[in-house]
Image (cartoon, rainbow, N blue to C red):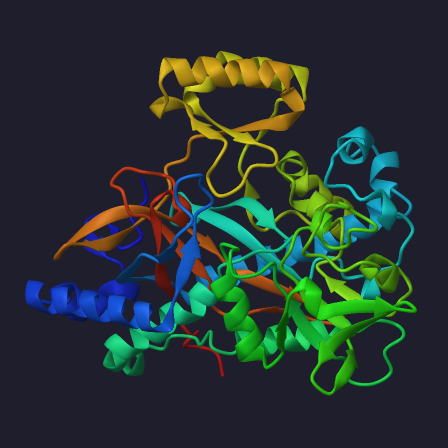
Length: 472
């Protein structure tokens, strides 16, 4: 298990100044600071929801005060690797909805795509604005040693968590302003402006001036509603729900107190099937009738594009190294985790025979649900998953159980190691890519746990990317 703070019982140079300050706080000061942080979170309203039959309440996001530090050289590798994947993902999406060269080359099986419910047949042959299908990609990264970073999965449908990244920083700057003056920590505050620039750069063909951009939310009951309101506010755009918009003669309008306003770009935070009851699920009460036709008439940009979720499907993940090589002619900068597709007969046999040392994941699962960690599961649960895999092999993948790196948390007044992962956010515009120097570090607050999702007891940390001292 790799400890990100200590190497051979010696403090890494990046953490020395931090430990000399935060690490030596008295128990009383730690208690006061933690209470201060909770008050800030409560006042700001940084919350998340858990979808449960018994729990539909808002929860304050669990925040830990000990930051995670990433050096300039480590960040460069992450930056370059995530950008590389973002380019390959968009090239892959354009190809599978057009000529399908990757199928003819035998790199990815066509039936793995065409039979996947995330593939949208209505998008075949359609040229999305500026060929950008997934303008916001959040890649989940884990670390296992000093130089080994692995991408756990790519999220390009509607990735969330960026508001926590920014608010974590605001909390830390309020509580420890002196440390930020002494350490060269890169800023993350400019993300909303970069996001707005990205969305505006993707204006549709039939938009001839500055585009009008809105953020489409399912509403207050959504688990990420806080983030929707935060981003709309910081970008200076309208936060809308389906009943705020309508389509007439192929044009999308927003209803306002002074009359209709033409909308050119929608940053949607609702799933594909709810977008338009005429083109998708006809029972949707949160979509806009005719929206898809407005989109395909080049009067509107929907970001991310419908059907883009096929690229972050767990069944496709194992092919990402080959996808990168096929479209970019490059080796992956960031490694994939060895992944077994239960769809494959040989892989499935290996998984069933070795399930006790693997993590089993539902292909369409998210949030830490629908998974099994073999070495921590009961015999009953293992037998249940074996039956699930045998009954629906294409619905599951498996990966080795990794020893994720650890970073300390304040466990009461003591520093105690916990496992972490990391989600940076890559923006893809019409002619540019941008990664803000930071991301969301999620932490498993339970000792020994590998599950970092807030819905399952995880929390968040501020992530400090240190500036390159040699950069001019």
